[in-house]
Length: 311
Image (cartoon, rainbow, N blue to C red):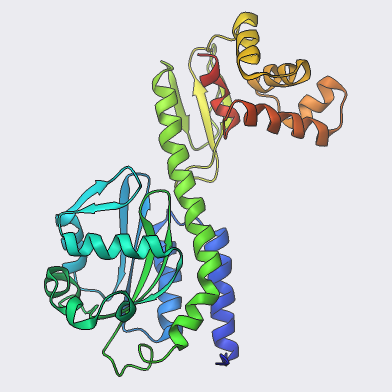
């Protein structure tokens, strides 16, 4: 079936794709704005989003009663070793696991389970129905832990947005950007957790989201993007050990070449790729490739984490 789009529909879809790919989805206000635009596009009466950031589940709603968020707070028990959400409500857990196993997609609730079975569940009677989400179409994508979901609620079986395939077809156009955007948000949250675990081993270290002033004995290095902050800085009040022996041991352990070892030492001094190129009399492109190779061999995602290989 051909999908006919008005200019306004196309503009909404393009804008949603752009915002999902470029905006920080760890900001609930931005997620709500994207959700609202898609709600208008498909003609839904209400909508909510639920998605993980690290070990936390985030909930954003538009005109949805408080019952769903309260119910999730009551039954949420964490995550299993495969990343599935654990719920004390076995029926809701089964629906979530089935949807996650189906992979990224647009899911009509009638196709996940027979309507009569859904209406007899506790989560439907106590949460979804009183909250106004009794007829739902969802945009979902699995993440390393749990999944990201945009759920759209309609008034009933005869609601034009719920009947037929138009809503599903419209949301499928947004799906690739939805997947990539929430994968990036999840990765930032995981990076934040790993960074703080690493800094716990370094007394006198901390993270700043604005450029700090170096202390008389300290050092500051650029860090990764974090939830709510496009840039960060790793600050050491006391310079961590950076002896020739520790650098040599790290290079040997990870199989670095002589050139890569030189590059690692310059990265540890806080030099940029361009500055490293000048120091070693090589092109900026070559210096950047060497920096990427060092991080890859050490299985690190950030220059700031180089210290963790030495300390």
